[in-house]
Image (cartoon, rainbow, N blue to C red; front, side, top):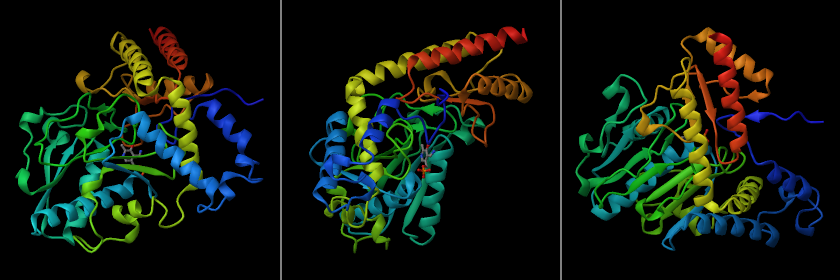
Amino acid sequence: STPHVLNFGAGPAKIPKSVLQRAQGEMLNFDNSGMSVMELSHRSKTFGKVLSHTKAMIKSLMNVPDNYEILFMQGGATTQFAALFYNLVAAKQQQLGQDEVFVDYVVTGAWSNKAAQEADRLATANPAVKVNRVTHSKQDFGKYGDVAPSSAWQFSDPAKTAYVYYCDNETVHGVEFDHVPEVDPRVPLVADVSSNFMSRPIDVSKFALLYGGAQKNLGPAGVSIVIMRKDLLTDINVGPVRPLMLDFKTMADNDSMYNTPPTFGIYMVGLVLDWLEEQGGLEGIGKVNKTKADKLYEAIDTSPLFACPVAPAYRSRMNVVFTTPNEDLDKAFLTGAEARNMVQLKGHRSMGGIRASIYNSMPEDEVDQLIAYMKEFEQSRA
Ligand code: PMP
């Protein structure tokens, strides 16, 4: 029989077993088609129902207002670093009737840093666009793990700013915002929610654009979800020259089916969202996620051995990063964890240490088992 593992991976990450079983049950004969969902034409009625179901679930679970578009795209969240730059710069240039615009980045960890670096690169071909880091935690604090108050952020002229960008949950550094940052209401706010997508209630109307890859909270790798205000969709011939596949209006005009969409991923996300609804939606899962994170941080903070490098106000409920006093002990802890079938706990290769990713699908009971092992490990080293 299959060994039961406790999967603390950061992504691709655990998917609820009942979801996998449902997919398994539907694998050979999806919706009486006599074939799997993977083998269906994306233009078929049967797949059309899959896409509209997944979209409807996103809309209802997140309370997405009617003036927002929901897009399914490929190329991972990383591709969106470029797509949103092109499209939102275009929207601003069209609005202003001039080329010179600013793009503002809140840099709080590895992922927002990468997004800002991609904007730097693209701006070399679009010199009218100025990339501004409104804050950079690594410079402010010498390392990632805390965020300067937004009153200290150096924003560009709001009238000329195409967007303010931030990462709501930094997967590598375990840094999460517990609030939506205050920005000038004229400026479109963009958030990367890849690693805390649908993990708690969120007010979509505060954002111009939200996006994330599916492979943490929502399903398999291969599909990214973009939720954006329709008024920001801009004609492909306006603004920076961009590949058609990165053009939001082209995607929206074709209901994410300009070309072949990632059909299996869209199907799996739908199944995960059916499961999420059974958990009480974002309200329900948000409570469980908070309970899990609170008890894990409590175990770290009361421990003589473990420590968390992240400032308490910015600790992630999804990616709990911690260390022992040295690398050898980290290694011993990870080896012991493997022996207990607790897997994928190793910190990001750039960070070392330990990272427990406890996304939506991680049950509270498995967090309890991790905490029990931490106590046992502590005692064995006392
Ligand atoms: N943003 C965040 C917050 C992430 O965690 C990741 C992936 N770990 C990415 C962006 C990049 O996603 P992808 O690998 O799908 O391009």
